[in-house]
Image (tube, rainbow, N blue to C red; front, side, top):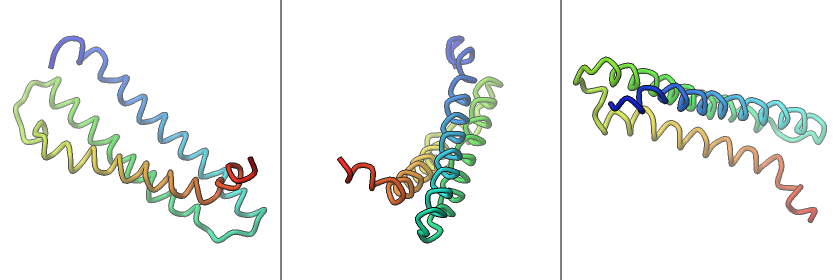
Length: 111
């Protein structure tokens, strides 16, 4: 890892935590919207999506720590990154996006 990557590795974690917080806000708003409109409880899917994003965040922390330690391990392989970071992050954001669209697509239809 270069010096610049070490100095900015915490910024990536802040972006993931911000994404997790935004998804939590969408969950809360969607739950309230569903209670008003008497929709089925689709907002429970946000728990699955947020859990996957949290797994990706933990994986990012582990990978950054291993890279800063300079220890060549299996944690720094591409396969580990795909299975524990990229795939859970993509699935989590995708699940949250679909669930958000279920609740909020009426705004798009109004225009």
